[in-house]
Image (cartoon, rainbow, N blue to C red; front, side, top):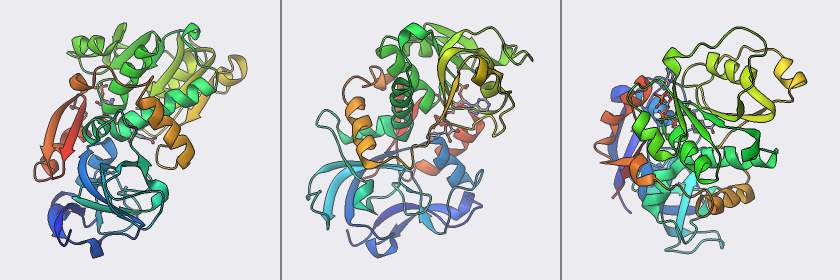
Length: 329
Ligand SMILES: NC(=O)c1ccc[n+]([C@@H]2O[C@H](COP(=O)([O-])OP(=O)(O)OC[C@H]3O[C@@H](n4cnc5c(N)ncnc54)[C@H](OP(=O)(O)O)[C@@H]3O)[C@@H](O)[C@H]2O)c1
């Protein structure tokens, strides 16, 4: 524990200012729990922070990585004991405090979840923030009345981390899923995860009217921009849209018509600031009814900390399919 490897980001420029180096526990943000990291994973936000394509960190330097799973090395909080298998997703990792791309992390006890017995640390990071966010979206949508009878669920950015896991989890629950992608070659992959239909977003006409034909029972949106606007105009009465990401844009152009005439619900999903009790509920569902059935097809890549930086640009280019696990030891 005296010294260990970490991927540290030194400035908003990313690039050469983000690199693997040797640090010690004293270099890390304060916290009651020290975790010996076994695995982390790459999320879009990590690519924004590590390449400098987006400003994620609030102070510098910080260790990158919004996720970590491992075992407790020491804890000043009685809820955790040495050797407990734990997971941390979001909670300010690689934003306001040092993150998970390191062999050790030091975090506040409130950020830590015990891993359900059914999940090992590698599986937890195959799922990671992307899968936690997909599961949180499903959890919140269902609390707000979503059910398979409302109609098919539209999932965009479908070959990405959130998208792939949302397709897998929703179809596992018995929903019909339409996967939306910009990749022409993704049909077999997405049908293999459980999608009933695959739509190519590059050839989709989004129309202009305030209300288009209502086809979707609900939607999971990782993209924002015109595509999210179109979803508001095409979701059926009472359906829910989980707004998760901004991979295609931060703007949302729509009217109030879908909301006041169809009762469409736009649910904002923020996986970073979830109360500990709800986080535990969502992890318990990930280990049971939401457990991805095709994780081996989704999380196909495993890289070391040294190999991590070279992986990041492809996320910004939108060319990645599925998830990448980072082996920390
Ligand atoms: N709200 C939260 O708490 C939360 C949590 C996790 C992630 N997110 C956000 O959710 C989004 C997805 O995250 P992720 O980790 O799943 O990312 P990812 O693995 O990189 O997947 C993003 C997918 O979006 C599509 N895409 C990327 N760039 C695009 C572009 N310019 N135009 C259209 N489509 C594009 C691609 O899918 P196709 O080629 O299949 O279309 C890509 O695979 C990101 O914006 C991320 O910041 C938010």
